[in-house]
Length: 135
Length: 287
Image (cartoon, rainbow over all chains, first blue to last red; front, side, top):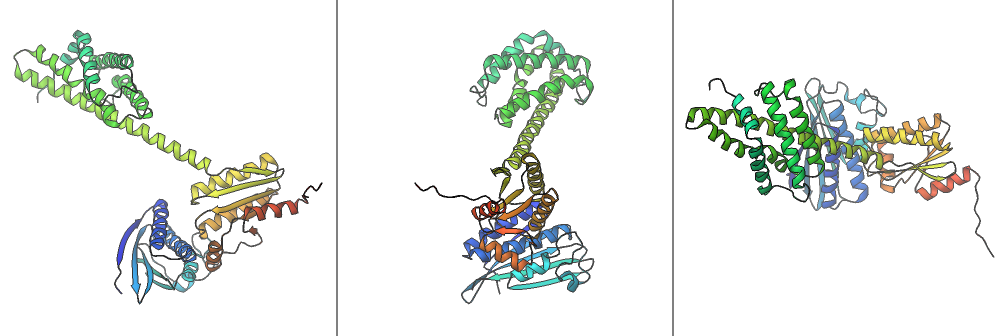
């Protein structure tokens, strides 16, 4: 599926996370997503961006607007070149954290979106892809 | 270039101080960048004369190639102060730097007269004078930018303070309306303000209103829970209000549990709950 619009942002500071959140909000308003959809996607994006920053030592996010059969979608691909995740299943468990947080960021964002895919290799980095569709 | 006879510049500055000052002030007054609305001619003349005197002294004693030395301290201090006052008065960087750069013409004219027909000597003099003035000009711009950054930093801090006011709603009831993004720096201030407010007013109930917070992710939730726990340790009960439908749904999916923290949809609900806790009742007067 080819995106109709795509843009990449760097995530190096916590200010970048805030700016990215605003961008996600703006895109979703333009794509006529509802308020609940917006809030869910912005929250998931915020979690994943923070992860890329805190565990991956900074990374990037690629925002893509999708169109498929009359429905619209927003895809976000978070990438970092950090240490990677050794045990994905454990990392996706509610309450598991290595960074002193609530341990809900990764598992929680999975529940906030329609599509969720994660790839990680130890020593190479982590890539998380999320998509949220309009009904 | 061979040894630069820099002494010549200080000699000229001493000998023609009055003339150079006149020309220089005239030059500055005619510059289109001069802000007459912000700076009077008398002030400009006073500043220019002071700078010439300091420059002459520094040239007599110090090495013109190295402005970082102690001999140049008075000149640097003067330029820093000048840049700061210009920055605070909303001058632009070029308007500020013009102060130094406009000295070039009057000085070069005098150098020309002083060196007579010796072109090599003139070139050497002009070269050393222009290097010196360029350095001073750059120093002025750097100080200017530094002062501007200080202003910005101060405003950011003021904004942090302003955006987290703790208000007293009733005897024993505090409210903290939060607006905007809660990052770590702001949350820290929010927490400190609230805890201090609880001590200062001896309040039993604190209401944190998050109506103005656009999204609650796990980090924000964790910050809120920590604030609640800290307030409880101080003997105050915390109510979180302003949880809008979309925030509530998101928090449920995210899996954030607020535990036994009392949450309400609106600030009004939270206040009436607080009144109930404190056994305060109201009746409408009927006559």
